[in-house]
Image 1: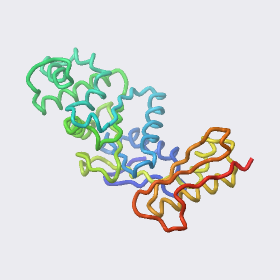
Image 2: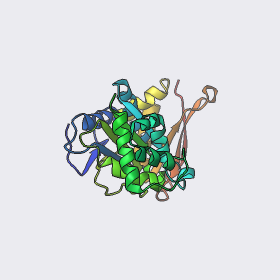
Image 3: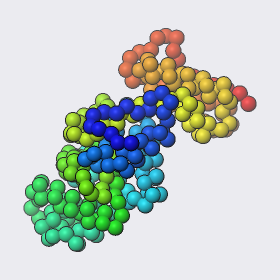
Length: 271
């Protein structure tokens, strides 16, 4: 399926994560015009990491080499921490690069000392390294939690992600809709990931807890839908077997709910 620029809506009626994974993989397989980069956006807890994990597994099974980085708050102030995560597994290929590129990468990633590399030199070195690493097998770069990626890495990867046309390198990233990043309005195709539809939610609960009674599962799905409409986030926790209950906890995200909506409910197993 080819996709033009702009934002696509995912997770709508009749769609589950299987369809989302298929859409993302087809986006890269068809080339989508000139784009080799895709930015998945969605609310906190909607399933962005799950989607990225599933795509990574499927691509790896297909013979694609996957390089990953995760934005984390405590590394956000360390320059090139994210680039370090992405490039370290393929850094041996830097030996085949021109000396100027190799030195720029080694200094930026902390493997050598010297003057800070010119930013454009580092971008070109990163592109050259990725193309070199993709000579034997296609590469997919996956970055989760983009807003927490250190800015130096985000700038380099943002530049790189828009210059992958004609290469065997793909770029897939995800971020929350309520957190800003340097990738916002950066020209990448966006895929808006929505909540699971009811059928997919039932399947997910069945997979996580096959012993849950159908009526309890239906109630969990219904409560989750209500909580989303009220601006509350719901998470399901499977308790120890001896507890005999299943808990759905709801945390406030936007506004105080009506008094009739409980923030914690316990459902009997129904065995």
